[in-house]
Length: 344
Image (tube, rainbow, N blue to C red; front, side, top):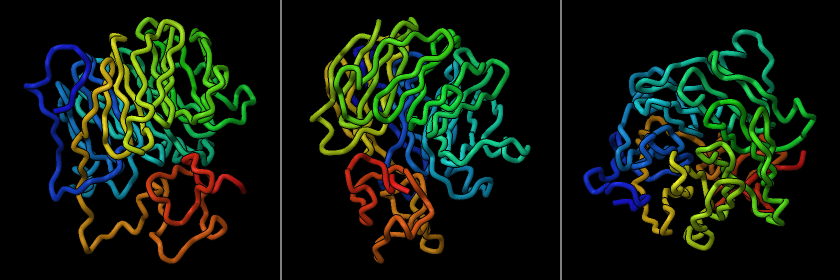
């Protein structure tokens, strides 16, 4: 059983996975339930795992079994305001709604309407507190609003910032948001207050996640090595640095009540705070059948690059600035910062 926050015991809600023909796969996202007594984890093929009081509502592999969607890479999961559904974001900006989650649009849908959206990789979906829409953030810091309640307060390009965005956090009242860059810089929009950043504290470790404090007057920034950094009213409960078994951090989620947080590594290890106790979550997904091999190396979850051998160089592939995890057999991430083929 996973050890979570010191809220009501989860012994009656053991972690569970959903699907068949199961094999381990990389995890990409984590989202807390509205009660704070559980969470969902998401794997790279769109499988959803439930923990504590989280309720399973569906997954991308189930849609694929029904031939409703083709192969994709799942990147983020967010829970509805009523707690009875969730959205999954994939690498194309496609949005998949389950349970009570309403579908309000997607990046491919904007392209189909002839709206210019650029080619930057979508990296994050955040819903409007209380419902009514969601935002999708891309790697260039561009922000797309879907639904009437998702107000646009600005983006990195609108400020002339040529940064690399990785995450988005929304004020609990929906009146503003923060955009986090991979270097730990934080940009505040709307009524969201700027309270500091990792570079401002002399921290040079790459950032992966930002979570809003429940009063909207603070936030946590989590780095790729497991460090947790509290700003404003956000309380510091501990750091997972040195506790991730050598794996990089994929994502983090804060309790809706501000009483702690979970830190998730790419191999499905979840460390909860307060306490710093961690155990491996059961991260599973349907294995590709022998007749339908994926042909994509798992070290590069957001793009499709053939496995080694032969050895490939950046000049031999069409992708730039993509996420690199695991063994990196082609050696695209020479400086080991988690990003491949950074130079043109």
